Length: 427
Image 1 (cartoon, rainbow, N blue to C red):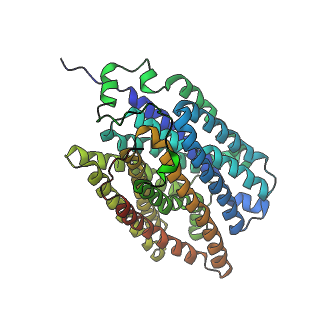
Image 2: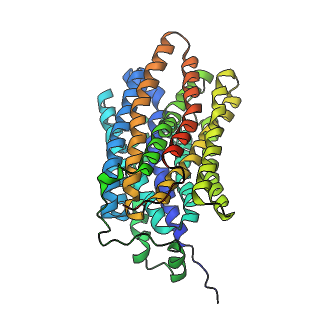
Image 3: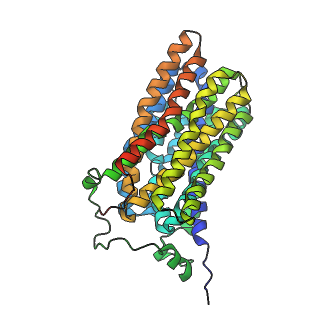
């Protein structure tokens, strides 16, 4: 008699989803408060770019550290350390009294938040067979979009009711609520008493990985000599900065180009980030659908990612529109395609590497993405200041949209050159 497979693994995805929602809610607050903080602290676009760069630099360093640490101490404890650190840092913004103080707070936030994705991707690899990993990743990764949707509604309301300091304090405190549920409901499958045997067997239904006596002793240096590592590195480096641009500068773009009042809830931003939720889940589903049709895993992932890379290109047409809703449509498509891309590129790490090395690889690739995130805000800030001085800031955004449109196709080509068939490696 066929034994029914349980669904506890989806409880794990729910936990990861809400953690990622909180992660991006805390990250997004400063972008929505930018006009208020610019007046309060007399920031230029370059000043703001430098603050974003501080976040990116700390995030890069943190990813490298957390990826390694989580492979050693495990997902449960690693996530606890990460969310406590970033929640305290998020609240700390309320006590900043200078541009430098905001830079320090952003650096602390970046360091803490860097643990989210290495821990989450490792949890997915531990709890799901390969055919479900992209969908599971897409679902939890959509928390980034929900956080970005909630923020344009929640933050202006808090700002109007109490002030900008309270916006940081209230959103930062939410992480401690999540921590209670994580402590109660998460454990690795082998130690989870709520998990049935049928579901445990299903989770481990892939071909077994190579056996090793030293599960924690990943040869970290060797990862840099593997072509598949560099495929993941360049895929992240070229595309992660685009998403950060969408997070940190889109509110300002709509404010300066279409005179949207960011002190009120923004329907335009809510629509953009809602579209990304559809992209994240749909992107994870599409490659899984191809696998169910019998396609090899690498072909399914690469075909899906090529579709998403092409879908970003129309954002370059934003320069020709003066209608806010046309701009919303083009940017929504690009942002949704990014999240669909993201759901799949994260899954390529667990496709190509054994579970015990996944967090390290995700950390290395995430660090590369954050390095791009260090350099890109510096370019964005100086570029927009130059165009603002010339009285045509919209032209600066148009140039940035051209860069966005090209980045994903270039990343796809480079990934294909380094890992044509995404063969699984031994570490």
